[in-house]
Amino acid sequence: MMLYSKEDKLNDNQAKKIVKELIKQNKSGININSDNFYSTLQRTAINLGYIEDPHSMHTNILSHDDEMKCIDEIWNYVLTGILSPGGKKNYRDSKFFPHLHLTELGKYLIENQDYDPYSSDIYLNKLMELNSDLVDDVAQTFLLESLRSFKLNCYFGSVVLLGMCAETIFMHFIVDLKKFVKIDMSHTISTTFKNLLESLKPLKKELPSNIGQNLELWLSEFFNYIRQTRNEFHQPIVNNFSHEEVNGIILRFPTHLDKLTCLLSYFKNKK
Image (cartoon, rainbow, N blue to C red; front, side, top):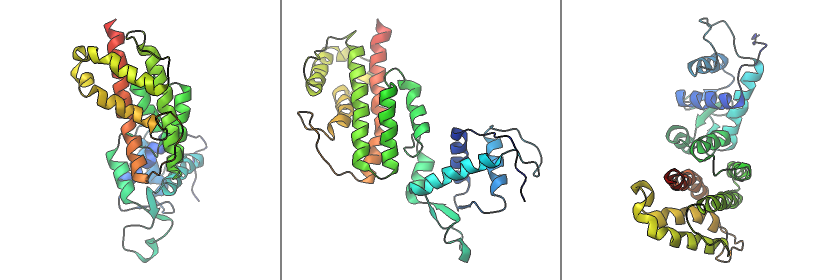
């Protein structure tokens, strides 16, 4: 019988990072019923600096709740298609639960992304590092609901919610930018966007190259997050979206938002 620590050591974000690191280190698969599962979790937590190294294989630092937080996160990866039943090793008893392996989608998400749509808190925290002035509580709520819908394979709903997030951010952006650039906001949001482009045209040459280059293009790409489920009159329309399409939309979103923040920061710092 395993003796757990009585004191919890991990928060939810730490459990998420431990599991992500555990998956990276065990590409042939993991087995939550294996005898060394707990010790592997503990060693990963030590390597990440979340707990002190007891310098003994027989000293248990993590609590039962700590272990369960990690297991819950593992099942989240199963539900979202990152992990799948069965191990990579060619053993008769490793074809199903509790053996798990990375899917092809999982390999891409675990190894290649700064922004992981399957880890909502990590995605949001990364986004807020640069864009906290534009992303208020309402925009954060829409964004988190969009990511949650994506994880549940509700792709149209995810795009709609991301569009609402983008619209909230865009209106904050316009209000702030109006302090430095004359923009007519008296009509629809589509007209406001056209007025924005016209107002920025004569200023384009003075903008830094990382902002001014392809200015109209990346502004249009950000505004497209709003228009993907709206017509030119801003009325709702229904479109079909695949998993790959929505995954790409979510991954591109931070890049375009960073540009908005950089543009606004340029005018604020110029003042």
